[in-house]
Image: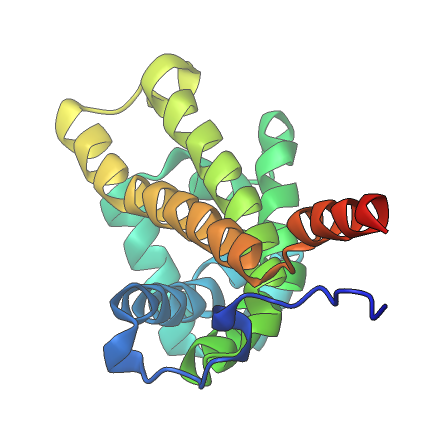
Length: 200
């Protein structure tokens, strides 16, 4: 008797969908594009030793200084001053430069081409981004990092940080569900095969 083969769900073998058929992917694509630009223009400058910032073009250095002056972002200011109390944030900046920026490029390629092999990478990114951004939000609201800020400054920071927590959370849950749908239905097939063996 021929053994029942485990097959993937129809989503795994369907044709690639266009972006217009994937509205959530349009959101993710915009998010990754904006984050890629912000990471290169601002965050990456604080990853390296201070003297290396001169390697960045003057317009990018001005963007960073203008943002620090206007936002009073306690984490980026601490990173710029090499604060020993915020080593954890400098580690996050390093991971953003080394891991997340390449992730953005791969994710943008995957979303443009409906490439399902990039789903696990986006799960890894989303988990890291959501948890680290949540840490910053809680530190501003309940820790010492928000103590020297006005209500307006805290509100402006939250407007910047909250979307970068919510969207990666949505991305993680969405991609996990997509991966589950792509998995072969092996448990059901094993049960059917077991029943067939008993009837022989």
